Image (cartoon, rainbow over all chains, first blue to last red):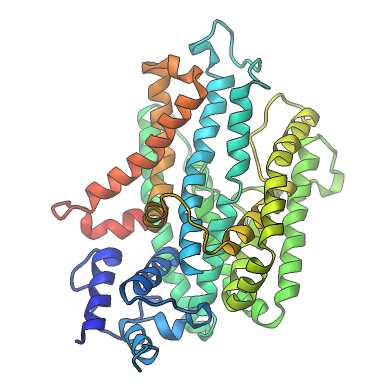
Length: 83
Length: 371
């Protein structure tokens, strides 16, 4: 697993699920499984902005970009200043 | 915008706790006054005092709290289900409801058990009614309310996509209609054949709060437009909210003056609704304005549901402990509020912190206890 995915997985498992190994796959839908609620979603996005030093435009905060670890990692990679 | 929403919710958590500490403040002022003054309760001589207006002012200031929670919930549902098919949406809604319902039932049963030990007994139907209408504690109406709104959300999201303005207008009319009914009932108007409409006005029932959730849904689907409006009109929104704050206090005095009793439980009025809307818009509009303790508020926002569930029984216990052990405190409005606030926020955070410890036997069930 690459570093970005690892960081995101660790955050979700530690801060939201409170269960190591809770994210069983990087494609696990964190929303339909009930792992993310309204406030934990906001916290997650806030964490992503701080950790990866990004200001995520509000129009890009959509299900497709944030529903799984893989989706978030792909979004961050695609929108990285270096890419 | 996200961090601003998180901060708004952090403030809303503070507001929700203060809403109930001020409620206990009024209880101490009118019904428990015999514990520190030589009078018979209830006694309303302190109405109009500085302490009375402090409590009223606090209550007025935090009127944005429940609207803010519902607004963010609507935003989330739009985010999570806006582009999903119906099956996917219902899967998400189902899991959301489970993580609302299970903690709600756990804490409700604990409160029932505590009441039972004290000799307060209900019939099975009575317990069922309390659960459905969120009457276990004064704060718990919010859970049945939110569950109803989540169940309605596929319809609301669909309407928000196709007819956002009509949805906002329609839900606003319904909500303001409910507020108007509350005024009429408070002033003793005979509603005649329309009397059954009063059933719509319960805090736990969705018509009285439909606009806030729907607004969140519309904003969730149109965040850029919302941001433009909030930022563009922020000075006006701030001025409006500031003007409505003292006006809301005066409004409540007028409502009380026309009521048939010396005191009625505070409820959201038409002006309060306008104040809440302007507050939220102003807060979101001043997106760069620094808020003191913002990191703490963001962390608190993440624990909102747990704080919400635990603070109400904690305050009940704390206020009654003060009644017996330190009744002199009941007569000091400011100090009582500070102590109750510390209990209302501190006890839930402590309980959640202990439950979250590595060795805690309930750590694995944390989400079923605190959402």
